[in-house]
Length: 219
Image (tube, rainbow, N blue to C red; front, side):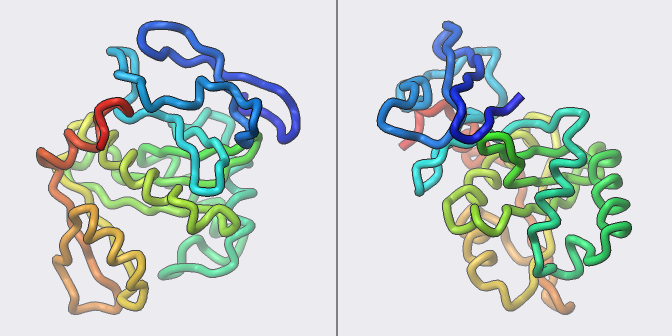
């Protein structure tokens, strides 16, 4: 369960082999210091990348695999996205539901939660492919807060952990900001003879090693 805005609630994480209660709402002066994971060296129980992240507006979010009952929360997030990219998410509700069901059933997914709301989502499909494609979305009011960049690092960390060999994506040629971000991470363009660009990222060291480092081991 994720917390409700304005209410006190905690989640339990393993931090340096100790159970720590961590506040999961918007950061404030009296917020639990468990959110400061800068000294955490990780444990064998940790996921491929630390789920805790504080965006550049000071909001604490959790990036994690979705619960089995997250479908409605994801649909609510997609209802807030007015502008489609290459027709995604689909404009009409019925089409959007079918599209989301395919992502949840055929791929593996990660969500971003802030308080009691889903504010980001990535889906990697097909789940059993060596070179799957992925789509990534962040709710409009949470964009430009470094959440998308952090979510992309999670995709790479989890994809390597699941033994994928590479990741692929499509991006409109006019989305220079997104293209620059992907290129900075390490993606390269493999096909330009189409309305959109196809980009590829081999899952190799040192990139995967870098994104899987525990917080205390990062630059």
